[in-house]
Figure 1 (tube, rainbow, N blue to C red):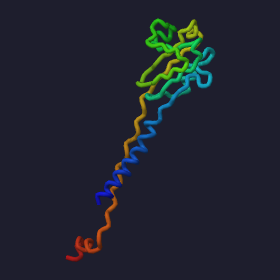
Figure 2: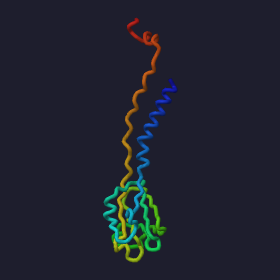
Figure 3: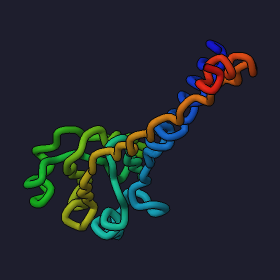
Figure 4: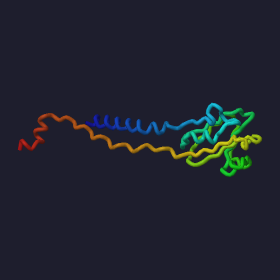
Amino acid sequence: MASKQMLLSAVAASMALLVFLPALASATDHVVGDSQGWTLGFDYAAWAESKHFTVGDTLAFKYASSFHNVAEVSGPDFKACNKAGAASVWNSGDDLLSLDEPGRRWFICTVGSHCKLGMKLNVTILPATTPAPLPAPAPAPELSQPQSSRRFLSNSNW
């Protein structure tokens, strides 16, 4: 009897893993600008509007490091293309940034007038979706009992 309960527990745990695993593995790596990358002459506002960003996703900025960089700025600095207020600046040409909390984030290129020419990205990160609660486990199947036990429990013999 104990081994059947252990088996049922293992099956239930496996099913729970199947329900939660897709939610854990659903993070998306967004290559900024898709095949164009991080460059001049691309509409990053339209690109961002076509995407869905959630906590756990990443932004991959791919660009020629000798011509561009990526700076994270505040909303007002983004609007004004003010590079002086940059919180962080990356310049590897292959920068992978984690979207680790919900809210808005703003990125610009600080080289020359690239930001004013449209090389800027604003993303809104949504909270990670939580999986629906698991349904209650099915009741354990009754263990077959010897026929004599069933007669003993039956009221018809009394």
